[in-house]
Image (cartoon, rainbow, N blue to C red; front, side, top):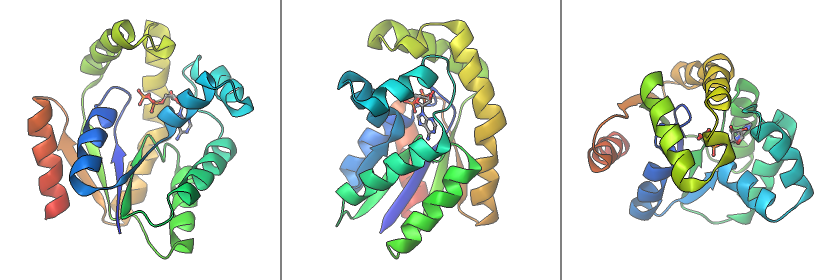
Length: 189
Ligand code: ADP
């Protein structure tokens, strides 16, 4: 199986590149942000809970997110591989993911990390807020909170995969197709 963690701060382009990667490599796409938003739209209990965190720019608690990811993984029995987009976002999530994949007799192949500096992220997120209507993209304070949470809680996940020799940084600024090519090169090597 080809199992990729697509990593990067909010607004780095994970969703955009995931769409292209799943098409090219025939992978299943697991975006925890998308799953939460679908639950919010559907008015589920999980959605209501997730919304209370997302609206403040905080992380949804690990036990909730990990439980949700586990049941989503089961829905894709027989997949050629996965793109994990927006997960893992904490060290506890990374450890849980390793354990879940081990139970399936597989593992993470590599982490591809899109690198984009903060100023550019703030610009992109505000722009996306105008187009998408995502509430968490419309308020500069919430955006800053998400960037801070990324720096404090999510950056350690990089070290988790570096220790396993699975980390690859990719420049996330430039043409979408150019970044996509760099990602494909890293995968194909
Ligand atoms: P972005 O990458 O632009 O921040 P996402 O769509 O990945 O957007 O996530 C939106 C929000 O959903 C996050 O700010 C967070 O509140 C919540 N979320 C998504 N994935 C996770 C996760 N793995 N753990 C905890 N919370 C998450």
